[in-house]
Image (cartoon, rainbow, N blue to C red; front, side, top):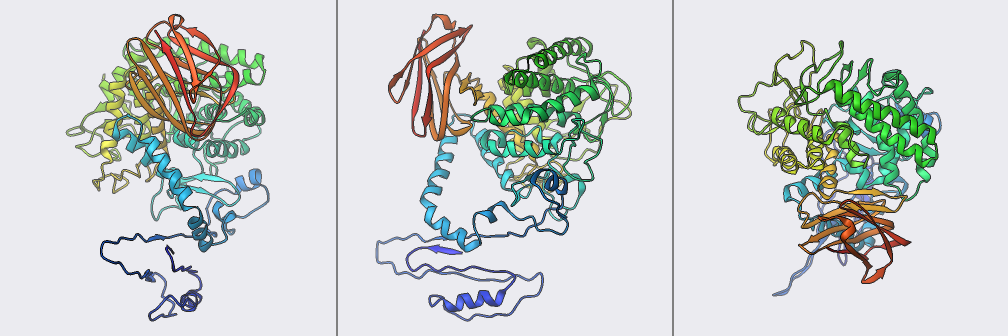
Length: 636
């Protein structure tokens, strides 16, 4: 601990050598009082105090800041030997070797951390406050901003760790005293495929996770759904595998250039080919065979839950193949995707929502699944278009809210499900059977509420023009995390606003919440192309929201009246490379005059209109640094 003040005291505790700690205190003439070198018994706590003496005259005030720092370089993680050998190099027995923390590469000890903090405190505090102030300059609902900011804590919680050798790892969630349990292991891709916050706020973390997943790829292209020896076998998760392909395209979009994709594409293509060969051998775009999923069970036959993820993955792989000038592969993926889109829609729609066909495994049957359009959620985020007819998608979404969403669970039979919502809470069940016919064998989790899944449904509702329903679903989740303890939950106590739960606290699926922000602002971004666009769904006449790019972040605002629209990008941190900007207008774009300025200086552009969408292509690429302000004005 360090006190940041004149004549400040500094103390560094070495927990494995208490007598030396006492000597350090005694050697400092500013520390007074009795000291004891008695080493406590295991399990006992060592108490200490630090004080800074000063005198105040009448009317004076003074602030003393204390910095508490720590350094635990020898922490051990119980999984990762395959990753260490195949990705980071070397042969290591992780059961016996201390893996260490990434920060041990930067600071030799806690006192060095404290000294660095003292030297850089104004800078660090300024950047932190700037981030906070920019996020909360958004005029999105306050409860949503609180949800976005609070779930960032997952990345710094016990659920995540960053090893000394560079490996970034995630448990599904954190269960105190039970971290040796297998089901929490290994960057689980069928859970992490929901996660979005890390990829938009810290793109390098997302690329790190993708690199380690692809480094462990089997020779035939399969991706194990956990990065442990116990799970590194022949059982890939279909949803996680599709999520890996989609994530690869997202990681490309959130990069400053195409270098990462150029080195990664061969493995991504191999993963896509493995998905096709394993579950769609006739390449008709409809899945078959045994499909392991995030429901911890096998699905057989055809569903739009997994089918839409497959179509979205094909769309993302098609885009990446085009970027790699592999037209033959792109055309093939496009053909499978279009055929599958039509066939799935025709065979699975029951007039209200999409059902399951096929026998064996855990069944959905005629049930209404809240994840039945999960691939469409991904497709909208990556600007891949509609996977099924738009009007039908909206019909399905309305009925999902009708049949799966409960404003309160009072009197609702949840059939012994693990509770992640109390009886007086609201939420969305994973699967319901509004027309009866619940199968004899279905998933253990059908009556549960998964916050990460609910956020995805809510974002898809917003993306599809049903913003009121989307915000209603999302707010029900955040209302469950109001700080009141829910001791009756399966992961008790629940209710912590900073630690949403599923099978563990700080559950990584909840990182899907970031998709609510991008849905509300209608965000589109392609970093290597230097292209960014917005189409706000939330308050389009007076909109403000936080946005991120490959190398920075800032504030986007849109003001609209009957005669004009002004779209403003204020870059607050980092840099933004631009070649094109796209905005949506309330009138046909070909009848609009446009004008672009950066810091008040006109920038030449070539407008291109597509209905009510206008793209301003810059005659010369532009690099915006922090504090610069871009304004696009449109006169109707």
